[in-house]
Length: 121
Image 1 (cartoon, rainbow, N blue to C red):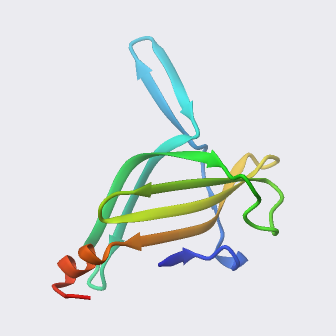
Image 2 (image 1 turned 135 degrees about the vertical axis):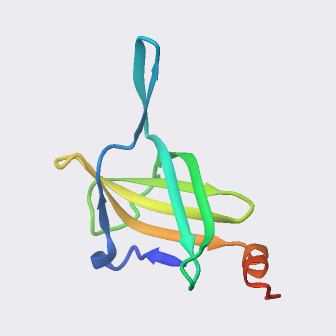
Image 3 (image 1 turned 90 degrees about the horizontal axis):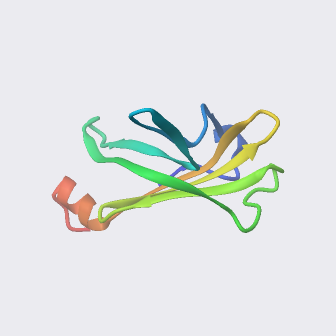
């Protein structure tokens, strides 16, 4: 499922905050840069949870620009497990100090679909 299409600019969304994971241990504290927690709940047509994900995820710099519409640095984020996969493309706007989500794709395994809907696709 393509949730946010890279070629449809009206679907692109800014992300609030930075992509980092703060930590604290006693009197020491810091933050892991380019790392965060992704939380995703995919609902079925009855608004019941179909696939839930909550996991650490990291960003990595794209080797080539993913969209000619944006001149900032391009990054990837992805997560996968046995049930599915989430892929995101982001652009970093240095002036605004903000990431922009330009592509979001969710893949669900056939096994997960068959199990949830009691089907055999």
